[in-house]
Image (tube, rainbow, N blue to C red; front, top):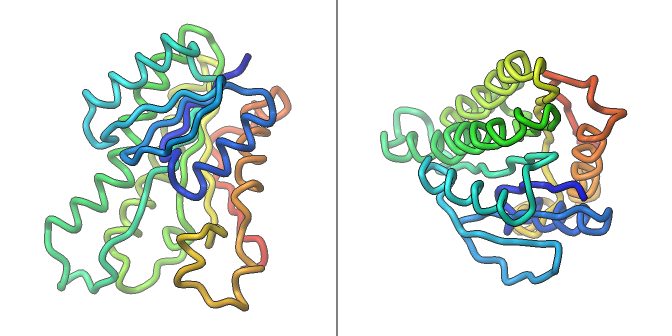
Length: 224
């Protein structure tokens, strides 16, 4: 049975992806800073700090002992705060955004690669952002962090291809989650990308049919 290692499993995208892959018959190892309270024989959750390398190494080793190495890592952890011009940001907030987005991606990808390499197969999917391709004002830290995620993913795609591992970055606009619905305009919500569509793309990238896709930046804008 294939196994998905899912970071950010308690968020809107994470819970939809968890449900999608369980329905497809996968094991899912969920990891998040927040408990999710979900129970299923094929689901195993661990609380962790994605910016702490020791914490990440521990939960990946435990997940490997429970379900085996990941066929797919989907690293969804990310976020933005605050909405402010760069000269108004504190260095603490800037570092927080970097930790949440690029550092968390690095720590999780590193551990997943170590588990995938001996098997000679695996897929890594990271999350970029449209604003990294077309920057918006008052998002300097987020734009920098997500741009780094995209470049990092393209680089590891070159480093891991000889081991049968493909790495790709999904770039959505706005994902239709409850958290985003709290601030989005009602007329725009039908235009947003469904999290299940992103999960389906991840499944394809991890399949035999999708293994030739490597180092791609895959925009998923729906109607935005």
